[in-house]
Image (cartoon, rainbow, N blue to C red; front, side, top):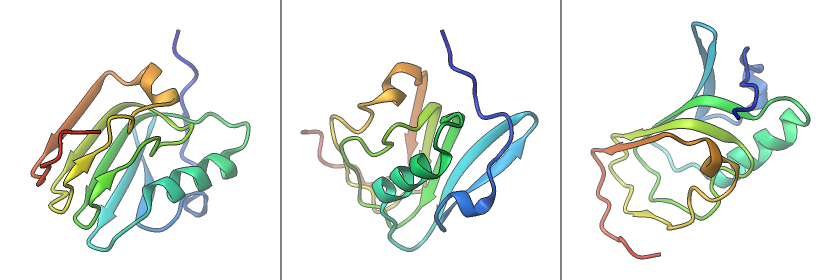
Length: 123
């Protein structure tokens, strides 16, 4: 059974810069973009804290950051996504085997990764 998704986007101040919310129809999509290194773990832990008891379930995450080098273990904290798209992350070389560990593991239905330099298939 799916949890209630965030129907409206939180204020921009709820998420650290380089990431932002955008409303598409009745869904709130999370975007992380740019060309400078960002700490995704820090971003999602901070977002989780700021959301408190509000829904932490978003239908989609779009990552278009050209400087991230990895998706580390537990990167999404307790934030849930149904679909994750990583595109044009030209520095991404490693996805930890436990990157999707946590609540996202229970809701994720699709992961699409393209235009990266992933070279390490090990944990």
